[in-house]
Length: 371
Length: 145
Image (tube, rainbow over all chains, first blue to last red; front, top):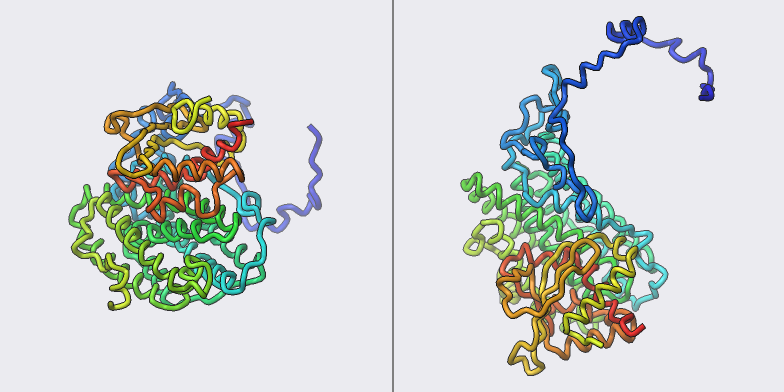
């Protein structure tokens, strides 16, 4: 092997603050040339052979033997040592605070992680940007304001759960892997809506105080499960419907592709949140009260958020096909509102949370206006 | 030649899907079991119900159903025959449906085409793999090639 030339090699370490002493093991190895090999006897289960399925070797395929047992209580060493490995007694703790499986687990996390990895896309490569054409000013204004809203709100679904991700016991690795894909999804959503706003002569519109307030409440959630209710169940469920509307209101294939692909990503996040809450509520039914209280507040803020012109009018203009068809757009919005509320309540049902009696969101769109 | 909604018609799309290979791999795999319900144009009766199942990048099953419960689909996509026909005509003409004529857009409005499912979580799979579903139907443009 050729010798690598290192610049100023004679100066490397000349001002080092510590003196390095080789370990007793290294000294012995140097002296005898005989490897220790004791680590070969300190091993998890030996002889396991995970078999790939028809889609390759997925996480579910390696959930075998003791490696597949996810403990109800996370390891007490609180380190990053992998589940199933031999862990020394003196590993330093990272002080994880989410150490109970029920606090973060969802049985679909592995499936959603693999699906997310398989269905990643690139906003640069997969959106046919060259098909973008100038739009009438009212439609461009409306699309840019909508994109501003999404650019503003989407990354909370990365920032907020990853705050908790670093506190989740490493034994619940599969959940952390899924949350990492969610962060990547939200990065792409933030970038693609910013790109769309800047790609057709419009640009960014107005941020709103109420949107920021709703994001702050998600960010400041007192527990991971509470955050999941506010973020995954209500927030992302609502945004999922907006993405579906986005495909419907698309003025061209650029917007159609953006919204459809974002919709796919968002529905994975909603799927994780719904199943996590289901499992958490099975384990701790008493949590329902706290979740209801949080959703009371979250629903109120949602109603307030969508009571300012920056958020009401762009969607109506896009739904109607222009400012001159604003009334038609509002009428369509009204028809969709029932669908939004219905799907939210059905997801609550699926999570095992009977939200119907407490729900602040009116099923009748007209009641938002006090009619 | 088989015609929509014969199972053989879907299986022909499935063969095209495998032939396309890389473009569906790029979309990512899909594991979903669902049904297509074609209603009579007067809306009074069900003409046909076809069960479809995707595994990975392939259609692995297409069968006429008499018992939906046994098939246990994640969701059922329902529309009158004329709506399906219109969508497929648009696909044959342009390679894809008109902007507001996609599966997702029609399901959003819910008047001409709608989803049925007993569990919102399973219904949400329609959205999770929507690009694959739409591209699968878009292959109808290549059936005559």
